[in-house]
Length: 341
Ligand code: NAD
Ligand code: WQD
Image 1 (tube, rainbow, N blue to C red):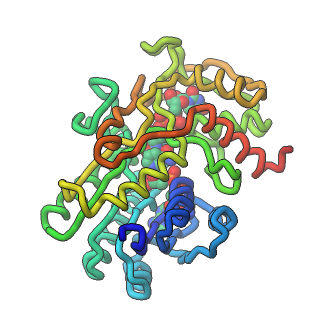
Image 2 (image 1 turned 120 degrees about the horizontal axis):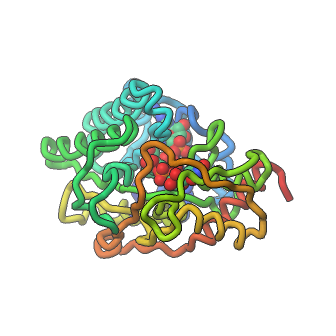
């Protein structure tokens, strides 16, 4: 049975990895979590254990270290891998491109080599809508061409997808699914796990919740002169629990997919503007938010949202949670980590 698989989650202590771990454990999968904790903390693993009431098998280490990965494969009979481990800050990748190429591409090639050595032939990969750049048409579907990546981070996602395509060609046993996430937001409804941004958040929702918590003085909305209903940028904000559930479905279906190398958009299919999100945060939580409109942020795409039909048709996956759920859960998580009643 598909749910009896033993699954390795690289970056399993991270934001999306930990939410996926919860869903997989609740569906009866056996998990091995690997993370170097460079961008997360042990308390996230503890949160997964609290939610699921189960001990988690966790190995701390770097996925671009082949000796470490080999030891994990050697001591565990792994059937499938979900590869979350990567750095994800667009800004940081512009400042430190080599760090991003080395970590994101290096961990992918090291992992694929270890998988080959230990005859593990299923991989689900965390890709991103960033591979599309500013799409010519929205909603964007999976056949839209890649544009020149706006950042080294985006380039690493394009490269990793290409690496997978090449390995699928070379190894007829290998199966891969690249999941292109749109904008993951929210937290687990238990408020035991959520996003842990490092320093000042660059992503919108953590900035909103930190402003509401009084940690930031005010939110700056980057631009109100875009070609959108209220002039602010438009995105597809998807609840992280819905996103996590797609990984379960991908794992259950991967063996049966017609294409050995598949790609799915994971988004709601609904475009929401930044100003609309701010209004809905205030309405949902009842917390006033200090914000101002500022200049555009360099490199921002004007509007993008997913056509999620392929994931619905092939994986049977649909989002179930609303933006209001996302904003409420993000706020509950922020309150929990700050000790706010
Ligand atoms: P995250 O930073 O919370 O999680 C990534 C985890 O990987 C962290 O816990 C970090 O410590 C770990 N890690 C990084 N490099 C590692 C290495 N070499 N070895 C072992 N562990 C390592 O990020 P996330 O939001 O959970 O993102 C997960 C994946 O999804 C990433 O690949 C990211 O690029 C991708 N993604 C994220 C978003 C988003 O907005 N959150 C959107 C699209 C795609
Ligand atoms: C969303 C909107 C900002 C902060 C990034 C990556 C993408 C993917 C998801 C990983 C934009 C506006 C933001 C603020 C604002 N990650 N904003 N004030 O840029 O859509 O996507 O995360 O793969 O690759 O590029 O997400 O949350 O940074 O911004 O007005 O303080 O909110 O301008 O329009 P983005 P974001």
